[in-house]
Length: 408
Figure 1: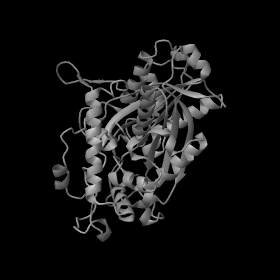
Figure 2 (figure 1 turned 180 degrees about the vertical axis):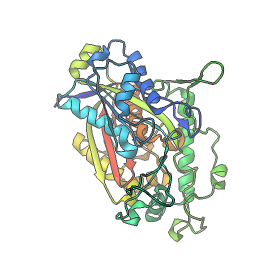
Figure 3 (figure 1 turned 135 degrees about the vertical axis):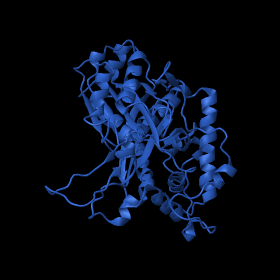
Figure 4 (figure 1 turned 90 degrees about the horizontal axis):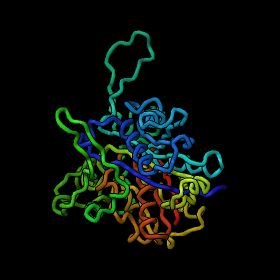
């Protein structure tokens, strides 16, 4: 098996729902990060790219018909460069990185691009077609922005509860209070705001020019949901989103998950350039990090947020590493309750190395892009440190977890 290296990793700033990137199509967001990779790698002849892997969780809108291939064409790559789109819901971007790395490791490719994209703002409504030739009566229009739709009636109803209700179940299981969740969310915003101020994201960001009806384009340069002014008082004023509040807390069935301690809806894209040793030598570049192992796991769908627990164990074991070796662990913050639930099941893990630059509660979670963002963020952190071991991991709706171990 060949070693697989991350040469570079870029991403757009993450825009909020109906925010700064609302006017940009998802295939254009994906094309933008691919173009940025090419600009940052002038030594690379694009004809040498053997495949483009992109994750996307929706696929029902403008990113239909294989957004990886569409983005490669829109980015100006040669028409001889193929592309494939993969879907593991929230972990689609990381799945794309893992599949691309696997192709390099087994010798199927030498240089590939991997990434992910999502525009939750532009996710369409869908209208199911009738199975009858002349339907009568009304039909239902479904939003494809997030969560379950057109559910198979044979599915166990417990498995198809809303994502936020699943977070409430985790809070009940591990007795995680509303205050603990708010405190975690507050720290996520403050860490992300500090990282922005220090310019730690600058190396990975590809600012996006957004055309306007009149005048010059507006250039989006920073993640839109980070709140440097986040406070405990403001968090406490928010009402629970999925259950009614109960002063007795989650054990009494009271709601604890709010818009403040959950990730927002977002738009964005991310991409990484992967290569083997031969490609690295041809480019004359020092890699950010080496991909050493991946791990995937599954659990009960209504406890999907806890699936990273086993996925991380598997990724570390394959790499011959343990929690004590970690310099950084980037765990996607779908919900504060979900992250805190994972931490409760990792007693040997040092939370000081968790999401040092903030996480999705502050930065945002454009579903298909988040996994690629996490892998790139870990790679840049390891490069800045000069050495170390890092893990990128996400929970996945319907009860899955995915993890990737990187080393430098």
